[in-house]
Image (tube, rainbow, N blue to C red):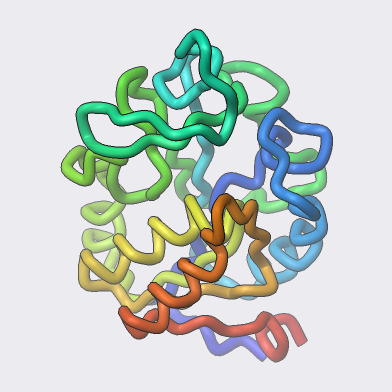
Length: 210
């Protein structure tokens, strides 16, 4: 069944080596979603991929702040920042898409997180919540109205991308079984509560890939 039309787009978030088991910032069982995402992508006429793309020494890396450890938080100019293990460094194998991600028809690959002093979870805004990536304008100019989201991690980059799609006036739909979460200090439960508050729909792939 293909219920998706010309105004629908699948946003596939950060399915990269470093976010999967064995990577620098592995999301538990992150690799499990790849076959499902491949099947989902085949059902959509329009697909956009995002790619975390950090320079070495990025602000979000614990290694950039002597005396800190990954998953600690610090205060930066735009608020609280979780410090992460080094991950998705530009040009490295960890930053590459997984070899088993077979989405050759993607119409846009949006790289984010390349500003050294600002982290970027959302596909729409950097973490200062002011700096646009340009995705909203691209989607509007293409005439899309509904954004389906899948990828990694459910409680960070998928969450913020869904929230900002909603903020920008798109209908956001999260395909929950095509995501995996990292769950830092209850962030998965917090994400589900946020989606409920904002009335962002969560669905299962189910009939989409039948």
